Image (cartoon, rainbow, N blue to C red):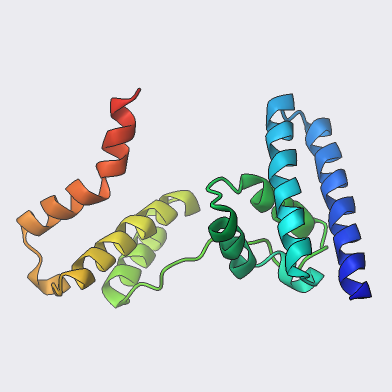
Length: 170
């Protein structure tokens, strides 16, 4: 139990230093305030769960945090983990869970990455769309070889619905 209390103190120190760094590099006061609030909730969650340092910055912990507190925006936690990783305080930053894609999808991503020299962000976007397509096809028991234009239209309509709704409000 004493080790966890020490880990929480280390987390408080890390957050304090992260916020000082944010100020030094010019993050806005509003962003720093939002991050401070997010990280306060994160610290309480971690302390309530009595997590040791090794378990604080994991995808599983972040997922539990998001579900328990019904939090959508966790950019402060991602930012803190990247900062701590850069300082070699943790072994790896929190990564976003990625769906493992079957061969035809993975091969396409590798093809785009290798032959077209696209950015990681762009291949990440491709990955998201292909993961959505794979889930959509799987839910309907449609083999990739059996895709028709009407299937693609239906998938696109469903996949892009949240984007379409957000554009209506602009």
